[in-house]
Amino acid sequence: MIDTTVFQNKTAVYYTLGCKLNFSETSTIGKILREAGVRTARKGEKADICVVNTCSVTEMADKKCRQAIHRLVKQHPGAFVVVTGCYAQLKPGDVAKIDGVDVVLGAEQKGELLQYLGDLQKHEKGEAITTTTKDIRSFSPSCSRGDRTRFFLKVQDGCDYFCSYCTIPFARGRSRNGTIASMVEQARQAAAEGGKEIVLTGVNIGDFGKTTGESFFDLVKALDQVKGIERYRISSIEPNLLTDAIIEFVSHSRSFMPHFHIPLQSGCDEVLQLMRRRYDTALFASKVRKIKEVMPDAFIGVDVIVGTRGETPEYFEQAYQFIDGLDVTQLHVFSYSERPGTQALKIEYVVSPEEKHQRSQRLLTLSDQKTQAFYARHIGQVMPVLMEKSKTGVPMHGFTENYIRVEVENDDSLDNRVVNVRLGDFNEERTALKSTILI
Image 1 (cartoon, one colour):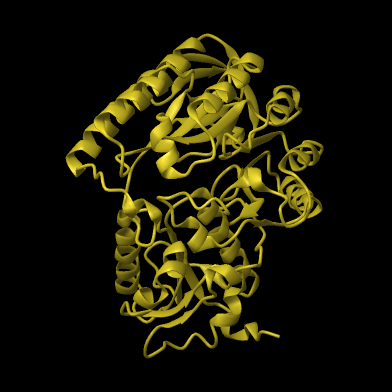
Image 2 (cartoon, one colour):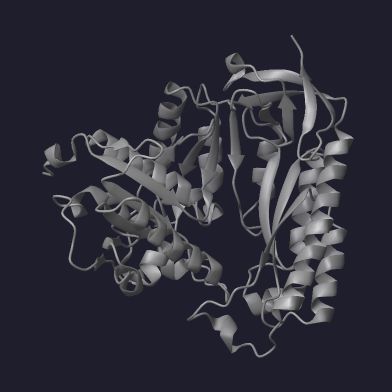
């Protein structure tokens, strides 16, 4: 039994780097500490506890983690500093040596953070507590709102794919998940707390069910029945796991939105093979066609990595032409970053930083063209939008079912409400459509 009296009236700050899953997990850590008596420090207030949830998807992510830790140690002198997340799991010794760090927790320990805080007395040197990747077994549930309108429901963790460029399986362990019953219960709780929208998050969510003998499709069907939740979004799903049955179900479901995010990574089959991806461009294109066949107005976001080892100029040009021909809405473009211990380092052909930048800019320009064309096609239409609270004096924003960002006059009474709007023209930054609320 943990004695929580030491936590009463203590304050904490939280800093998260990386993906939506990390933000969801940080929010859950915050909830655990609040229930123990710890409140979130106010702006400018010195905190008693600092929690840093790290990312390690690129070398730059590692650098940002170190910078964040140094900054928090300086801003909150004397605070008990806990570092967790992917960088902490992969390089626990390095993180523990950073001045001011007290405890480094791996993937298996982050859900039990409370028991590693002790009496909050600073350590003379950082202590790393991790489990080897092959022994990571626990699934820490997380359904969190944070400061956002929408909730993020963690349905799965870990990955069994071991793509040649990626360290995530080493940082998060093998694929595992909670039960459908537990997910449904968390969704019901979110609805009871006023939640209208839930984003399903995980590392490889289409792989849901490996540890419980269930399937992602069964999860989707079960969540669709939860009363009170008006919208679900599938955060990211591998193309080979996005079945036609799931696509068909979303097209006529009560609450799953016509919005997909599908990692492509490369539009060249030779590069996909070097990456050890589990599909080819033909399969990816067939998934896009299927979505558009049954949901012509669906938003499709796509992840692309440029400059991986082995991506010759000819291969990149093939990839660019393939992506240009896809009926997708937006590209999330990442520059390849070499990760220690990955199989990609055995590939001889290396792309220069300058060439990576040029390729990235070409794809970002293409992405802007596709997104703005998608938005423009919807100008003048009437659509339901879930509004999100904003600061006084600035426009409110929200999203249509198919993820078009809209902008309306600020009205606090609209926060977390679904209202019908008529989509107008682009705002000045061309990041949203200025819209009119219909009474």
